Length: 100
Image (cartoon, rainbow, N blue to C red; front, side, top):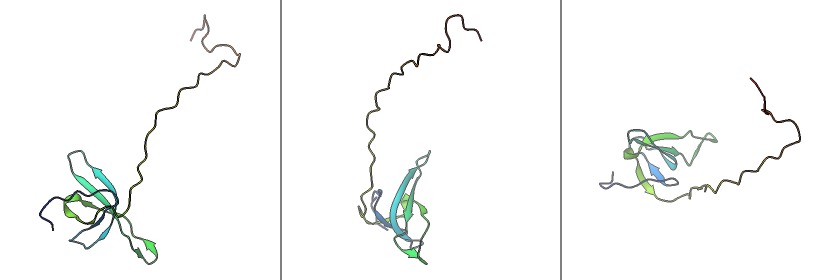
């Protein structure tokens, strides 16, 4: 295990020295009280099928190689302008004198 902290990000190759499980980081989750869990997807298939993601504490993983896969980052653009609705010519829903 390294003596210094190594930040782990999406797309990095990591290994768990306890179980020997290794793969690519697919998710990083920060919990309410600061606990960071990292989802790792194995790069190899088992019996022709992908292995399910496994989740580890960040402190348990060792960074093997950074930036193996570049994560897709979605950007949020400005909201479109609202379209003013035109009247269809029918009566108003709550015209003058409307009672419930």
